[in-house]
Length: 237
Ligand SMILES: [Fe+2]
Image (spheres, rainbow, N blue to C red):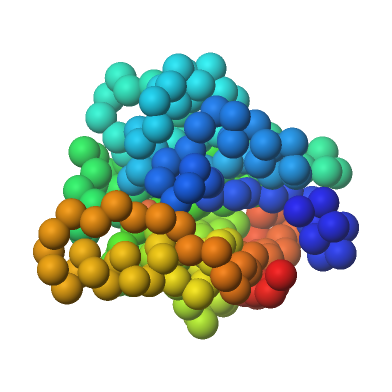
């Protein structure tokens, strides 16, 4: 990550790390490693609680956030403001979609107050929208156009070809893709994923190993938080 940050002149890096722990959840130790490697903020998703001990870690972590639209009172936070390399404050919001995920609070019920809270501190606001449905991702990107810098979709592991800057100046992509082994079924060893689907029987999943790629999106923005470019990134290791 340090090499990539330098090569692309990245001022601020957000990593969705929800499956950093062998493809399911994250541990405090792994989150610390992502931060040490150069992530400014780590976001999570529907697998937030998969690993034991993460609730205590999130309760005190400032740079690792979980979806904001979980049940009231659960540990952690869904919005953080951190400084970019040049000192610009950047707000990051993490939200879960509705379809097939069933977040306790619908994202449209939560998002306006979060954006308002973020914009009270900085015009540069990034939303990691962790959702299954392309329609929800496009709808949220449109609904926030002109109010945030970027709406970046995560969760499906498949990078979409719609990186764009919308008319109001909000960058968007339906899914940033997966950093992980692409010789797989969304990261899982293909034979195991196929066997579980084919038989409907429980099959222990194992992460695949080959064709590891870094995928993501690079957004450029001005001092007013308006995106000026948005390009998907794919690096084969
Ligand atoms: Fe997910």
